[in-house]
Length: 421
Image 1: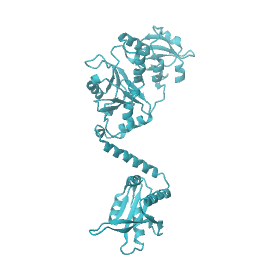
Image 2: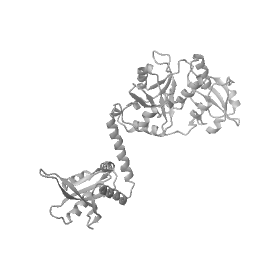
Image 3: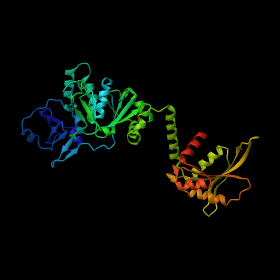
Image 4: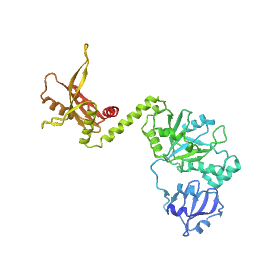
């Protein structure tokens, strides 16, 4: 049996408010245990109708919402999900009432994310659309019952591991992120329980993992798409499902890669812009690593020319292991107590298009090559190992320090390159 067959089926009989007979054609039917979200193994409808008392079904269950959540019982008793499990977490935004903000956050810390619009016993979403609307209209005429069902029934689609963002919790300066988990019986994340203490509301509950709770300051450093979306009127309903890829990716990053203590604190604009710069340089390095070694050497050569260096030659080998990718010169200021003057410096540059860590080989190549070059008396030399790597090995750093080789990593060169434009 597959989902397409079920969507064409119908409820034909009722035993009580949580037990129905579901027929999907071809003389096949199953018992629907609504609260458990389980369909029994199929048999002929007459076989079920002979089992105890049944009455005609007259409505009350929203099959469109229920079917995607069902599990099927096989002949061996195994339960199989209708839908293939979705490994990517969904993302929801919950808006809670500011009236009981403190008590509601205490409930979050206990693993219960509560929602309002549940000021009567009969408003459980598990009873289906028709019964919810009927009970809602009996309780109040102040709000549109159909609209409230459409909004609140989204809670039935929340699965274990899904992300939920609650703006203005625990206070107006923060928002809180958490992950849903199954209730104790393992049949779903949604529950309908006793009201919040001191109120006659907030019976709708999504069970959450207390260990996943992450409080974030609105002025902390995180992708701007989060703050922008949380302020959007499009997500002002009590329960919202967010499908924007950038938002979901940003929330996932906060939950898996960020330091919780850092996120709770506000950061000044200057610090935020430094973080933006850092990401810019990281992206530059990433793209530069996609170039061929020859093309990256051309980038370095262009950078040197733009900054006033004279290119003397490139790709200089001694066939004995010595190697220099670029030789250039520049007049640099020389400040004296008497009058300004300059001196010419020759730069020997070894270029590496590495990832991760660069070892000492480049320093050795530079040293061997420069040591064998004839040097005029008084000539000033600067050796440089420039690599797109994130860092240099300890052996490389030690040898570079001993032989006066300047090390420039990928992020440093990216900043130099971007700021030189």
